[in-house]
Image 1 (cartoon, rainbow, N blue to C red):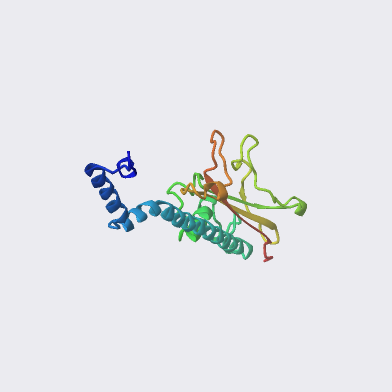
Image 2 (cartoon, rainbow, N blue to C red):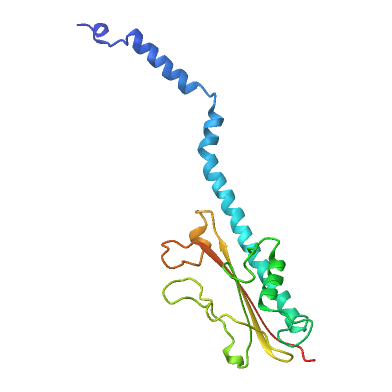
Length: 207
């Protein structure tokens, strides 16, 4: 057997298959669509995650500004409690006024003023300055917030007061949820909400 006889030659069918495969590799039609389909999902996930992170931190600043605004109104006597004045506000009225301050981004439900479920307030006079609350109250059996000790009892002229505001911000993007959430309700294996916190301490102006 000579060398030429030993050399393998592809059949016509094999040549046709090879030719089809080569043309497929060279064909660039639809490449952009395929690349977009592959990259679109992670791209939009990153975009949504960035937007949600921005919104959460903007909400933090909005809550802080609202807390300062409401605290200033208490300090200057524009808002009073059980003083027998036209400026007196009930807890529900104060909560509604606070909700109006943050309504640009954070919406309070129709029942939020009377039945807190997402927005919490602790407003009180403090007689012992060494006992100003400084820690976020949490339940003993979970990392959720404990609201049982919250009050609405601001003091009169010359009293020392604290206004603490908490807002439960729901995080929807899975990509950022582990990094910005700080509440894990009992029975939940994964943190779901980001707790925004703002505090203002002050002494009411004397009459």
